[in-house]
Length: 435
Image (cartoon, rainbow, N blue to C red):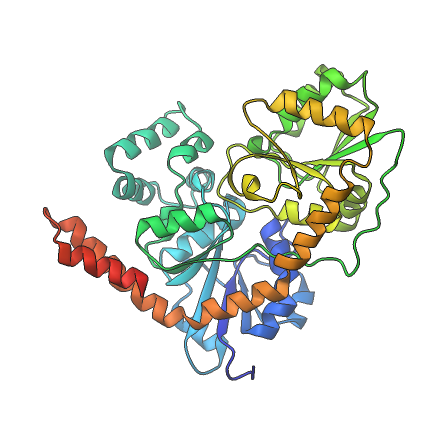
């Protein structure tokens, strides 16, 4: 592919040194993405890792002021500019991008289907307008949906609980050209709106050139790990509760690496459960230190409830280390091949976790084949090269998808205004979504 035939891609995302896995994901794929497209990287952060500028141009944007012309001028080439904007569930990194996608036609890279925490935190921190949020919830979910939203404002429900019924991703669709999802759940939910074309690609991760050398002991201490950006839905409290009764039965150490939602509360909980000395919260650590711990881990906890319609960059890193992990048998995690992860039911979570730990204590090789199968899946389906090729193909359809999305929205609006929608209008809507 010549430089002139490459699509022009504007990639709007958190980038290093931002402490979010979406920034790490962008860094992992950048060389291949820059090779497959004419790439410009954009961020609303005031500073970034200067080494990124050696791979592609990096530009700063004001999400409330940038215009399509600004993107076009930065691209400096012929043909349409394909703009990709990344939406996750952290208000710190995505509040501005949420405002941006409501102004600028773009491909929404939907990392989290459920973005209610993003919305409520953004409103709380005066980064998103409450009247816009309420109008969109009423538009998409009617009076019943708005009543549920009010329960959150009144403190009778949490945003996570609201997400189970109303994920909230629809707020990103008003100007969307298309949606790129990493899970079947997010893809299906987007298609069901009837608003925009949707695509699905496997979340990428750059495998180490050779599998991480295992340093897992075959006797003595069992090493457990949990890592990432750990909120209540990551089930850390439940893992601690399940491990506590085993503290005198099984010799284990549990390292928690990453930012947790309430370190003081969790450390107090660890003390009360009698796990001090066995469990340590390290906080955010360098990738090399994390990978070294994963190379020693006999089991990695990667549980989720509720799931947010997300794929797990953490799971890809676990597979890269050829490590065994345990996941909740729900969502994307439940769809993974049985030979690549241990799956446990939510309803019997504690008993299932304890049974698994006991099995690992008696058979240190239990996770070896599972780790190898996960590494194989990573290499076959999740490489940056495959992902960059997919992005190039999505970008090449930006203009046609934009036209289809505009027509679909027009048809949908006509259907909503009509007291008796005709078969002709319905057929028109279907036609525009399928072509």
